[in-house]
Length: 505
Image (cartoon, rainbow, N blue to C red):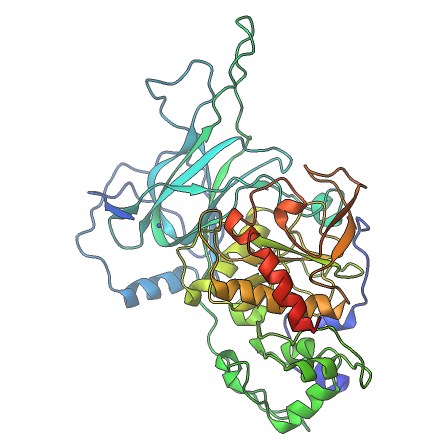
């Protein structure tokens, strides 16, 4: 079977199947109307752009929208501008000083209202990955082709809590930047941003002045356009002795049957999910409990304690540009635990837009933050769809960059959205249960159990400290952070129980 698969078209997982497991280098939106548009941004479309014009636009001409172009025109223009996605990077500068500003307080930085090429996600980055942003970041955006501006929206400033471990090759061998969480704002072509530093701390005595809290140096606003969704794949001709992979894979429900010849080969494959992905499928279909056990070549009568494999949308399915990421993969020895996150990108997305959200986060992680790839191993949307995250093989122990200090021998699952004050949809929690029941089961981990992990260094645990935590933990368990949001964190007990039940425990 391997000889046949080598001739197949594979993007994400092909190389992963030929690489041995190896230890990482570290070892271990409410809309309001605006009467006029701001000056136009005159940069060339289609590529990543660094704007060096500061906070003033290239000219003082203003234009007004009286009629918005129709949706087809907007889509055509956007596709022509950036068919594969793009990033605009705009330097922030001190804004006008308010009359009530406290003497000695750091200046507010940002950008006044301005035009931009179409984008859908925003974030702020800065030069020093170790520097923390003590303050608030707010943005407002204008819907593409209109004069409608959103209200101010908060951007989560999460400082360095989602990142590669200190001392790792991904951390030390790349130009990694500090970054806020990215925020999904939808199709936009205008932006305004302000970053307010924290107020100086109250002096401890009359003789000691308050110390201003400086903002990080080199702050830039990143505007990310995810590009267009991938076109449906036409059916390919079948190689010798092999049926063509059905073109309906992308829309096939988990219970759909596969062609007999492919089913026979699946039954014989030990890493069937990676094999199907290697064939160029957009979706890895679900398996029953029995099929899952068979796929991992368990001995007859053996108790698997592994959940049925869930349906997974591959990187190809959500349109990952494989040229963005680092070519090689990083692996750890096992998957002993799963850390659950929220992406903090907001809840103003539809499930149909989830692939665009993923492509935007991916580009933000790699092009803006300097990471080698998408940070999380898997993602789940509000409808419960599961997506392959970081490349390297969905059955493999792929080293991620999701929980600073605890990336080794773990996996990261990001639920798309913000769940500090919003309850996560039941479908999303169920998807976390299904995914962990299967993936943790591949490595013999009990979702209701405890595990001891060694910290690689975080703001909560020093490097080398052994920490006992739940096999399914929240990000805040390993790092002092609000992630995965209080409402999602409260659901992890339900996820643990459901996951273990799916494993047959």
